[in-house]
Amino acid sequence: MRLSTSWMYQQSLTSMLNQQSAVAASQNQVSTGVRINVASDDPGGAGQVVSLSHVIAANTQYSNNIDGATTRLNTEASTLGSVNSVLDNARTLSLQAINGTLSQSDRNSIASQLSQMRDQLVQLANTTDSNGNALFAGTSTVTTPFQVSANGTVSYLGNANQQHAAVGAGLQIATGDAGANLFMNIPSGNGSFQASAGASNTGTLVVGTNSVTDLAAWNSTVSGSGGGYTISFGAGNSWSAVDASGNPVLDGSGNPVGGTYQDGGAISFNGMSIALSGTPAAGDTIAVATGGKQDIFSTLDGMIAALKSGASDTQLTNAMSRQIESIDQAQSTLSATQVTIGGRLNTLQQQQGAYQDLNVTYQAALSDVASADPYSAISKLSLQSAALQASQQVFAQVKSMSLFNYIK
Image 1 (cartoon, rainbow, N blue to C red):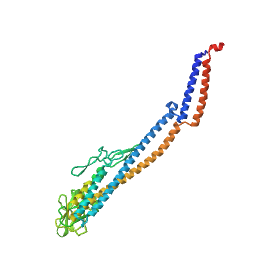
Image 2: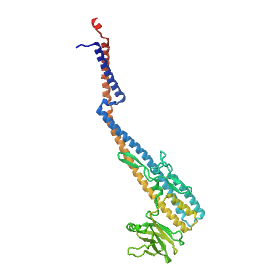
Image 3: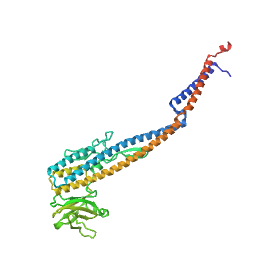
């Protein structure tokens, strides 16, 4: 076999370059601590690295979403707490206003305080999150969902949808609550019905606490009532009731309901009970309405209007009592929402903890696959460096050899 000088030269050069490449790869492993830098280093391991990297990236994004959702829900919880405090103060002032010793000047002063509270409620309802988005606009992009018109009424420009954040594969958490349900669509009265003294009443009758005492009886008759009842008083405190169509309300035996009211007693029929005090005049009425809604801003407006109207003590007590019921319903709605927010925050906390544990596991698995063993890498580098030096020495000798050297 004939071995040419050029062939030996090329073989030595190729060997030296291969050794340089191997040394460079080992140096990279030692300096970076990473064993797989390109897929050719370990095709199987490279696939595992890609898969684990995708999982870690997804978990990191979910963790970021959880952080954002937690911040938003904490902001909402804090805001609703402030709203509840304002309503507590408004309720306290309303109870103070039901006092026959107050002058009209005193009532006007309370009305002024309630007006400031109403403005504060509007401001709280327009609270924004850390990104400047309206907290209670639902999924709407409107920045100020609660608008006050020229006549003072408040309208809602958002929608009734909830914003959600993806916090896991197939898992979403609501990150807010629409203002429509929190501030606008508050059930009136006790949540089932509202009993109100007639505006033209001339007696001293005051409608007090009312409630559903027999849910089955209430549910079976409310649909047939046409939406409400009217209770009328006659001579001697006698009373009777008709439905919305003007038909007498009948008891289980088919007889018209009615009787004689006594001061401090209650009127009960069709599963409901209405507590009363005072003495009705003949012709006085009580209206029982079902399914009503009222926004919290109108509730305070009603209080303010009643205080400024110069109404009698009886009329003011009846008006304020109805608005206090609305405040109670609003606070009940707020409390229920705060409970759900607490549940969501608890879920987010647990999910975040799970991701932190998983991230440790996945990072360890990724390190096992992709990281280089420093001791093995250094040892390998030393051997490869020695081999490179040998290749370089051989190359130097081969380069200097020729036929003339042999002849000489």
